[in-house]
Amino acid sequence: MKAKILIADGNQSYIASMQEFLTAQDNVALVDIANDGAEALSALRRERYDVLVTDLILPHMDGFYVLEQLRSSTINSPSAIIIVSALRHEDMVRRACSLGAKYYMVKPVEPETLYKRINELIEATSVPEKSQTCAFSSSPRTLDEKITSIFLTIGIPAHIKGYHYLRCAVRMIYAHPDMINRITKELYPGIAMQFQTSPSKVERAIRHAIEVAWTRGKIENINQLFGYNIYNKNDKPTNGEFIALIADKLLIEDARDRNYRVDVLKFDATPVSK
Image (tube, rainbow, N blue to C red; front, side):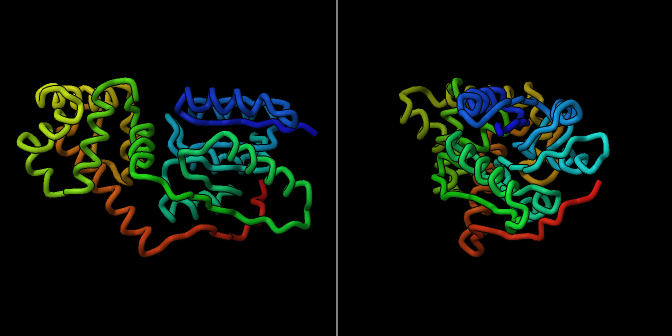
C-alpha cells in the first residue's frame, strides 16, 4: 500500500523540495502541501493521509493548533504525525508528543532522513502490538546551521547581502558577547574587512535584512521562536538589538544542552479519542 503524505510548512522552497523528493519514491502515492495551518486543516478535512509532517511555526494557525484540531470529528486524523521544526525546547517537544506526534525532528532535516522516519512510522502503525512511542531526534549542529535555521524561521532570504553580514555578526557576538557594545567601532569594521566592503554598507545591509523579515510578516514566527511577544509589526529592533537577541538565544541553548541533553524521549502514546 502506497502512502499519502501531507506536509505543512511556511517555507515554500522547503516544502517544494520535500514534495519533489517524496513523490519520486515508489511507496508514496500522494504528497500534498500546505503553506499555513488553515490550509493544512482544509486538506485534512478533504483527504485521509497516512502521515502528517508539520512545522510548529505556521502562519495564521500554528502547528499546535492543528494538532489540537485533530481531535475534531470533522478532521481525518492521519495514522502518524511527524514534527519538523526549528523549535527544540523540551516543553514544546513534550506538548507536541502529548498531542499525538510520533516523531519530533529539529531542522535542518534532509529529505532522505525524513523519508526514513516516514517509513519507520508507517511500518509501526501496521503492527498494532508494536510499542507506540514519541521520539525526539536532534543531531548535533554547527553554529552556522543553528543560525541558518533561525534566519529561515524569521524569513531572511539567503540571497541578500544582509543575510551573510548578519550571520557573521551573530558568530562574532556569540564568540565575544561584550563586542555588542562596540558595534560601530569593531563589529561593522570587522565584518567589512572579511567581505571587502565598508562598515556603512554592512550597517545598511543588515538593516535591510531586518526590514525584509518584518515586511514579510514573520512577526509571529519571531515571537514564537524566542518564546514571548517582544515585537509587533511596527516595532522593528535596532541592528544591535536583533544581533544580540539571536546570539543570546544561541548561548542560552548551548548552556542548556550542556546541562541537559536528551536524545530520545518516550511518552505514553495512547490515542486520543474523537
